[in-house]
Length: 168
Length: 168
DNA sequence: TATTGTTATACTCTATAACTATA
DNA sequence: TATAGTTATAGAGTATAACAATA
Image (cartoon, rainbow over all chains, first blue to last red; front, top):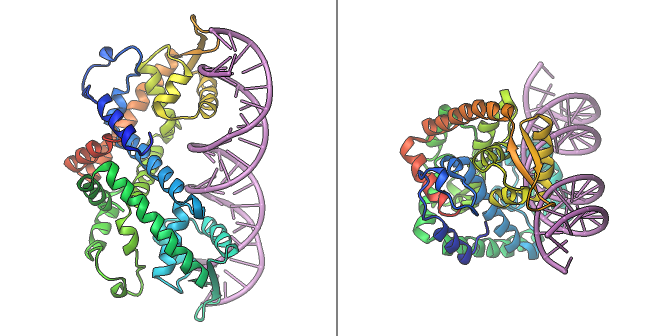
């Protein structure tokens, strides 16, 4: 599944047969997926993969992945916070976050300073270059989100966002 | 985020502050995630991870993962189809599917027979043991789905499923 | 004792490429 | 030439455990 209007329309045409229809009546060339049609996790995963694929492609010029984007955004909005705080908020393992931050530091988008109050923790900040990059990143992320709205439909996107937000 | 009623209620309490509120007013101990509150992909990913985690934990007794479940279900509903057909329907790379099928064959849940009409392709079938295992797997998967409905609410689950299905 | 950050290992999943055997 | 399946490799993400420094 790709996130394009053409594919979406194809999917809409293919969806004429209701999920409750017995599997024996599925056309010979199409596979019967009736049982999966009742699984929230199945569709959740498919849409998530499609959305992330489109995000990654849209942000390819800056080579930023979804997790990196969320970390940069959180550091920008919460300068000086620790790795533990960022990791907990985003549900990223501290081991994984440590490696990701090394990469962002290598690109000179963030810097770590020793925390004044706690010798164990590092305070995280965007560098000037990081802030500049984030401005470009945000423009591409906004384009990604606008593409999604165009494919999904604005009001459907809003419904989906509200439903998902209940659990995030 | 875990998929439990307790966690859900905590999340609901924590959601009092609207997403549009300026970040400067976020409490000092909580991180400001206002910008992510508008990202469909962010919540889609969080919910998908939570749902898969619960699925994996529920099916732990049989050690079946979501992708394996979907493959078994598709073979059961479409006996004799090729790896290519299964892979295309589920959006699984043929290389990945080949390894997964080896594992399912090792467990003696599926078997491959040479296709009668095409010497290149393998026809996939459940074994008797595979059919028996799938019956147990389906009971656990149904429990997983029921748990989800309990946490999310039946009507919200139905709305979410319908919205997601538009793109799957 | 517990926490912060780091390194290391293992496993899943994704993305490719190269290869064989068939068509 | 194209397709079906296999094997191999590389990278991202997840899950652990172990460790040093600090609380």
